Length: 285
Image 1: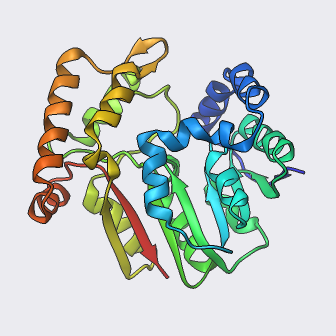
Image 2: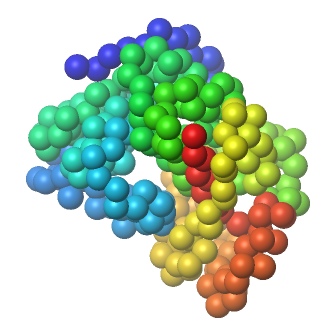
């Protein structure tokens, strides 16, 4: 049973919900074409984002986990299949429906809630070991409030993990980003919706403002796997159009090759300072 929180989504969240609704047939087919759970999760886990997920969650067992903004549900299903107690939150009614159907088909128990992260304090559960944001923290209108609720919901020693978040590079301005979102969202690889953007240091400051004292930026596996990243980016489309031009692909691949070969701590220290490379973030209560 999907439990619905009391919330009033803004216009941009409604835009995202509407965009996700257009994928109903594809998501239904994804369930139908997956005889077992591994088939459903495999495409995500094999991707750069999925590799980052596996790299950062480690091998801990018997955790109580809150998966915030679970999308198509692969992360929630993976956690449940490993024996964790999983609570999953998502504003899209369709995504909630898909996760509910998938969890039933694959015999996994997941507590599904429909609502935005700003309102998940309504979930009457606490003492979580982990709150996960997989490319979802930047969708929050009030990320500090969301992280404060996470902190209150965590058990002592529990952590918040934010992976696969977009990071604004030092040579770009927020004004540029939001104008681009209005005029050419496909050029940014977005379908539109409730998007926000932050520099590396701003992500750290969000956690610190929420009361976390132990926060760290972790290099993304993308920096170590240029071939995997490029295989994905060459085919990456949004709205039926390729997202990256040939020149951008060449530049990106060259940078990734350099990172893989050099890959030293000073390089990543510079990447943090300049908000230049992808990073994930872990904060401990």
